Structures are given as structure tokens and as C-alpha cells.
Length: 324
Image (cartoon, rainbow, N blue to C red; front, side):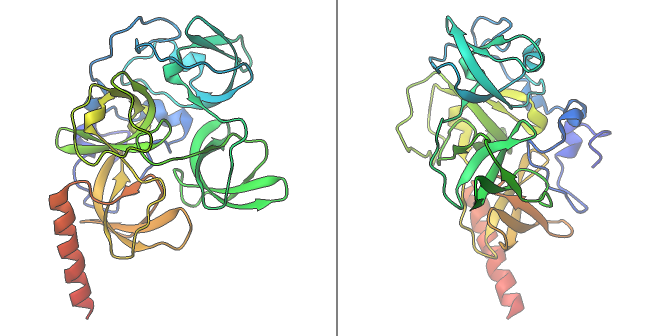
């Protein structure tokens, strides 16, 4: 469907022609405001004082970062008047101080500004990087997901996994890197069960509830008081209950023919793996769709619904029998 002309509901119908999977954060920054907003983004805001540094009224988020610490956060212009459903994009930034519970972010071409810590993804000073690590890094000042392919003298070569798969490999020097870890973690992608639909979201910060155990990966929709501030399709700000979230593998190991769910216009759709020729990328074929499409790590997961997983396994066996 045409993004500029359809409603969010119309865009969510099963594709009848060749879909072009669009990573949740992949549209050009200039075009984000034109994207349709899913009604699901208009969820109830958390209770808390809303002001310039915390327009969504996020609850207290005790994080202290030393001056000079590099982070990903939102620009002061984006935060001004932001509300649930607003377009937000994580940019590279540097902490220059703090005031009360707020961080002071160095302005780019303007004055410094205050940000509530819940709008920030910290970047370690000296991460230990290895080839094939899935990472958060940057592209033209915007936070992106990538996989490290190799080291070239004083540069680090990466393949971006949440952009157009035709994007050339990039050799970065002095860039920000966060090595991803499995689970519901700031900066990771996750699946959010919104009614009967599984939506693809980017996690930003965890709000309240008991602290999750280190390395814990939820496997069922257990009860939880915690919620997450996250970004949906096109960067739409939303709040999701942790009990309705599932982590998406940061480094999936999938066999050819495997049934999976892959991201398509902000939702997760059934598909089958056709090939895995490049590290960080898979070629998949969506059900009831045209030609195959390429998606990156973080945009593909084993089925999260047991019934659909069983149905997918049956379809895979049928395809094998037909080839025989």
C-alpha cells in the first residue's frame, strides 16, 4: 500500500503484492513526519511531571553519567512538545553535566539542553568489539544497528542491519559502539503484542517495576508492573507493558527453510528463510507475497505464537516433500 495515502489500518492488511520490508527505524529522517501513525501509539502516558526535559512525563529513572560520556538521545527540537505518537529519532550526543535528576546534553549548533535520563541510551567509553558482534552504532549522526564485519587498520567496518540492505559497508573511525546483549535491553528491538497484532518496536528505557534478573529472557507473557518507553514504526513514541513484550534475537541462527516472523511496515509477518549469504542479513519469502526480501538481524525472529510455529513447520515439511 502507499504509505502517503493509506491509513494505519489499511497498511496492516496482509500484502497482496510484493512487500518491501521497511525496518522500523529505516525511513529517512526528513520523511518520518509523513508516515501514518498506528492507533496503538496513543497509549496512556505514565504519570510523572511533564516539562521541557521530560515531555512524556516519564517516572524517575536514576541514572548518573559523568560529563563527557557519549550517549544516544533525542534533540531538543524533537523533545519540545513531544507526546505519545510523536516522531522521535535517537541521535549521537554528549553529556556535559547534570542538574538534579536531569542530564545536560551538549547542543549542536545551539545551547545545551536538559534531558530526563529515560530518553537516553548510554554508550560505553571503551567497548570490547569483535567481528560478527551485533552493535548499536551511528550513521550520519543517527543511531543505527549493525554487525561488525572486520577491522581495517584504525577503522571498524560494519554492515548496517536496519537500513536498506543495499547500503554499502561502512568503515567507521571514532564512532559510538554499544555491543548488544540478548533480552529486553535499551537499544534492542522487541516484539510487542498489541491486541492480536505483534508490532516491531525499539526499546529506549524501562519504567518502574522490580529490576529484571541479569540475562533473563522472558519466554511467556508473565505479569509485570514494569513498562517500557519505546519507538514504533516511523519512530512513533509509545509506552508498552513489559508483560506484552518479547525480545527479538540480536544474532539469530536460522536454517534455510525455517519458518520465521519478519518485520514489514512495523509489524511482524510470517515468512520462510530462503538464504543467509551475508553476515547479519537473511533473505526471506513472506506468505502470500511476491519476490523474496532481505532483512537484517533484529528484524527477524522465530515465530512467537506456538500455533503459528506449528503451522509453519507443517508448511516447511510440505515444501520439502514437494521438492522431492
